Every structure is written in C-alpha cells, then in structure tokens.
Length: 190
Image 1 (cartoon, rainbow, N blue to C red):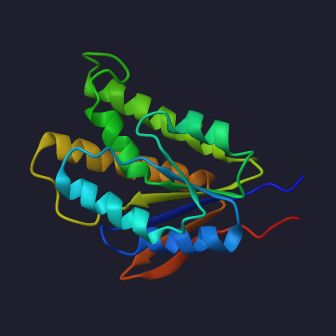
Image 2: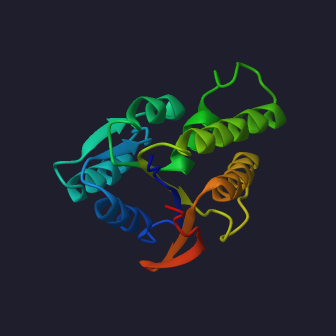
C-alpha cells in the first residue's frame, strides 16, 4: 500500500510558507482538503482568512477546525490525496487561549505538556495514511523575545511543537522571502 508523506513547512510571518505549501499540495494530488485552524475574532483576521480563501482553487475542499484537528485528520485522510493543515501555530494559539483545555485552572507547565502531547498525537496520526499531510507552521523564535509571559509561553511551546513535528516529518522546508529551503528529506522506499 502506498502511504502519503508528512511534510512540515516552516517560515516567518508573510514569508510565503502558505503559498509554497499550496503549490506542494497541488503537485502531490488532485483531491485536496484545506484544513483551516484560524479562529476569526476581528476584522483584520477575517481579511487574512479571505486572502487565503481567494487564493485557493475552487475545487479544493475546506474544513475549518479550531480545536479538534487530530479528529479532522482521522476523519478525512482516507478521502483525499492531500490534507493541507494551515496552520499548526494557530491551532496552538486556540489551545493556549482556551481556558477549558485541558481543564479550567490547569497550571502552565501541565497545559504545555498537554499541548505538546497533542502535537505528538497529530504527528503520529498523520503517519502511515494514504494521504500526504502538509503542515504549515510559523517559526516564531527568530525575532525579539516577547515582553510578556503569555508571548514567551507561546514562543516556547511553538518552538517545541515545531521540533516535535519535524522529528516525525518525512520532509521539512523553511521558507524565507518566498524561497523554500529543504531542511529534511527522506527518499521514497517504494
């Protein structure tokens, strides 16, 4: 049985990572699901989401899922050639800002451990599927140190999540100024 690959596409804000991931998806299959994790809370975010929607081919299916990403992959992976998850860091943001995850009053170290456990589960869920899964994520550790505890907590969990996803990924790319750099590749054994 032919298995898809897990591909991680990293980059900074406005680096071109989503466009590169979309081009990879287009090259790797005809039936594509765009798994959107953005939660829209204001006009500025709504505009960003609209830009992404307008750029995608109309034949692609879209599923919006802000929290239950693992379940969405499990439910969809057998029906598509490619799943494009955009993006891991928005999913982490949704988890971080949701007080009910994993439970009300959970101290930060336990919440961070819970979130990273979910990232590991996601990576394992993506492996061995007939679909290729392309995961887009922000590399947030290259800039200034955030000036507040929440910002530093997000930076740290995002960096750890990217490392964890990269360990499982068959391919990893870093995009800067619209130019992809291949960081990791596994030759096909089939």
